[in-house]
Image 1 (cartoon, rainbow, N blue to C red):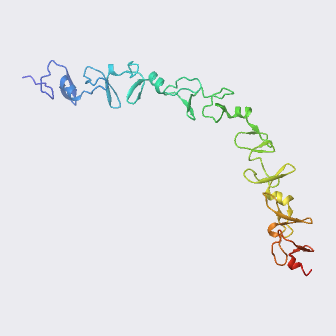
Image 2 (image 1 turned 90 degrees about the vertical axis):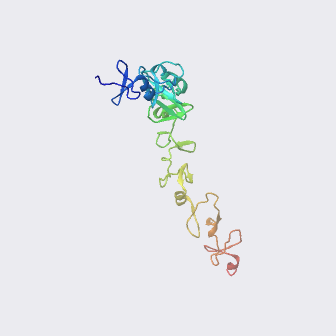
Length: 279
């Protein structure tokens, strides 16, 4: 007696019929397709045993249904992209969604290198210096008037030269007497400290910090002997070639302030009228 060879599911004989093995169990084509066939994303019909099943991210298509959503060309064995779960050939995807080069206005194809800056995109070879036309790549660059320049070209064409070191000023800088300076080059003539960001003054066209200027040129207070800068609106008293800080212009005996009041002198001292009445 011959052994039976039946479908694992419906038990009908498989002798002389097509069948499919799954986990070593035979199934008739009808049962296999009913139980295990994937449904095509495009036509929603089962993908039978006699059809090629193309899959992408757990989704399945008949080979004839695997085509571009826009142009309908087959995507079998071809590169493709997806957008909102729709299959698109590379050309349609590029035309619809890819960035356009800010220089040549052509599409930047998916997978190709592109350069981006402030919301604009370029082909790598199109992102070049306006002056020397060499690709900038990952090197530093400086934008000016909707064009990009490599640093050497920008310095040659636009950058001012520091009056002190004669080198280009590419960022920041200080203008003094209508001449440009690097911040690091604009120093106090006396102590050589940077003057950028702090108050300073000048004498004979040389810049000084307030401390050096006062120590070198300011008159000394007749009372406390420290310099009187007279800068920034600070007030002082002058009498017979002597000067006092406002706060130091006081009666020698009673220390009352004599600013705006009458006073007397006794040798190098100043006195209020009350203290000087016995002179």
